[in-house]
View (cartoon, rainbow, N blue to C red):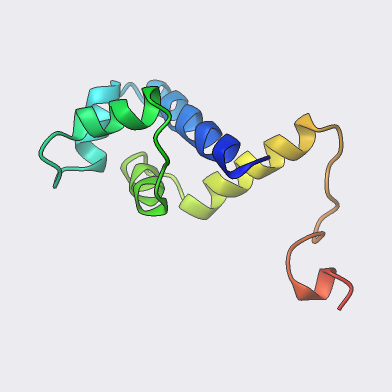
Length: 101
């Protein structure tokens, strides 16, 4: 999965989580970026214009959805791994101890 693919998958998952929680995309934007002058426009730009998703924005999205940020990222990575047709065994690829060194 490329970084761009991951960003897109993250955005799509956040959209789905908002819908599951009964939040409109506008409400999600307001909860995520209350400090921005136009949070709805910012979210629309990220969703519809292929803008890069800064990590700080991803972190705030997870918070607004009351989802653990690392768990959300991990779930997306696991989904990508399954889509490619294989799954990692527990512990594989999770640090130096599992990288042969």
